[in-house]
Image 1 (cartoon, rainbow, N blue to C red):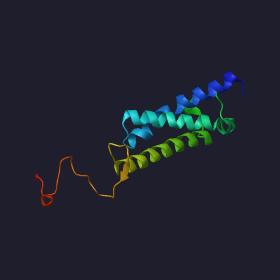
Image 2: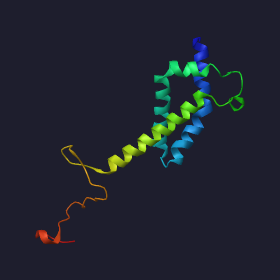
Image 3: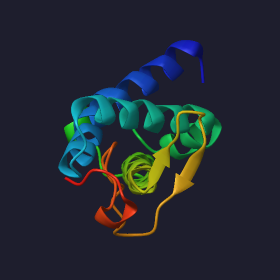
Image 4: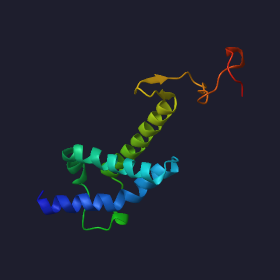
Length: 131
């Protein structure tokens, strides 16, 4: 493929799938900044696997409008990758929500359902002021 053809293919894929990637991310409850990260990660994954993507894309006719194109393995791969990135983001969010950071930069993982006390809180039997 010539450089111009590669650019056309890349631009065509971005144009065709950008709205779907954003839809996958925002439907999962991510805000716009998080959806932007998901979009960039999806395109990064595609760039990392560009040789494979190009080989799969040879079945597409770039002269046709994207709506006229049949669903191909590339289309499926891009949407699957976006969903996988959303799933990974949500898993990381759940993990981060169970961690507490300390002033020295240390991290501790809390048990499920545990809520840390507010600063300054001391239990009534600790001899300190109560709430």
